[in-house]
Image (cartoon, rainbow, N blue to C red; front, side, top):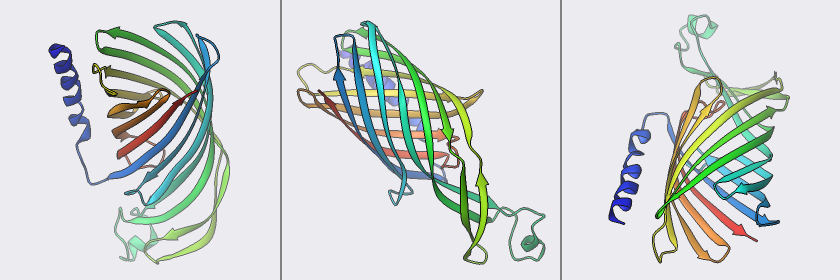
Length: 260
């Protein structure tokens, strides 16, 4: 028992190297609801909705909702697949370079922020998952492999804000539709405390699209309030490419899970 708990603490201590702060770090929140319904002992449906914020909780970052189906051919294997609708808040920021007219006039420096386009865009996502689970005493170790395909809809954005002149214009820009495949690999360790409603968990997830694009480190606790009602509270640190979002993101998250 003591050895298992020490191993969990060791995994928890492995997270701080992922949380080195930098000037571009930003804080946000993730709040979500997950509802699951067993159709049989081996199959069921899952419905979820999520709200994300960024910039110190000042900006709504994303709204999304999804539906998926799953089956468990064996106790140690879960297969699932589904669809997620994403309404994403994007910001495209350009910077001055040495060929810009304002730089040559001495009004701006190379690297200064230039134009900002702020807009909402729709994304459609399909995913297929395979999750392997192994129980070892009070531990539950799992590895989830997820393939996801996300298609960003085409959109014409009107207006851009210029930092030097402090005003917006009506210049239009077309962002063409674009699809992307990503493989997500998540390794997690959950520790069951005897006679306690609390179950701590740590996880590490890697996002790959022909290269390692993003890492996501999470540490949290599941609180089983009553039968069928669970609250997941967690801290998450994310580092890497995220389609025009901050490269380093700290998240305080909460998920309410309802099992029907």
